[in-house]
Image 1 (cartoon, rainbow, N blue to C red):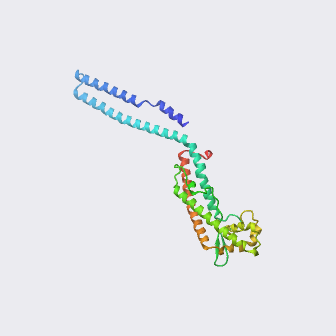
Image 2 (tube, rainbow, N blue to C red):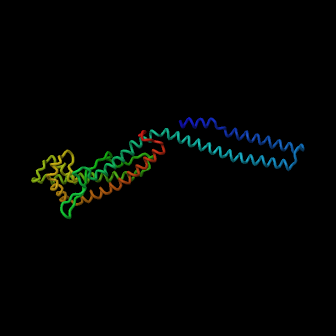
Image 3 (cartoon, rainbow, N blue to C red):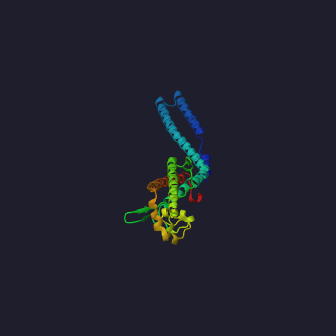
Length: 281
């Protein structure tokens, strides 16, 4: 519809070159007529001078008007070309939003939500005694196992690829430290005969101890019966694990919040620029 309207306007608009030539032709005839009338004595020299001055003033005004019309025409043609290009690129931009922006926004949001207790029996901190608390460190998942792949973003997305890389690098570090800590806690649990934990479930109990809630398919009652003892065993791990997990968790939350906002703004800008509606996504 928009393209047809531009075409109709272009068809109705007079050719600027033809108009300029025609105007100067008329002006030339008028000036020649005044000069001729002066030579044959029909009008005086003063009158002829005034008439020619008036004609030149009109010509100057016409030139300015013609310049304005030509500039407006070029602007309309440029805007039309830009709109046409955007209409052609719209499917590509929709694909960028769906395959590059939305998945990262969704995953970063999921990471931040994973650090917060959601279920009824879950909590963010567990009190061991009056002065000792342990913090929640859940397992987080990512579809971007290589931070460099996560940072591959189209140039249309106005987000710093280096920031995205650093975020996923921190996620990768967190996952590595988490796995090491869970493995060490699993070995400790295997040595605890009094807990009565089946050997093939020690890994789930270790992950539950860090998440402060039952993970996987562990029944609530099984976790409830020994959670205090299992969680307390975390204190026997190397403090470096906890320090690293705490630091990485905070960095992931902070960086994730910033990048999620940047990606959201980039998405909004692209939708506005390319006229992408919700129905298009």
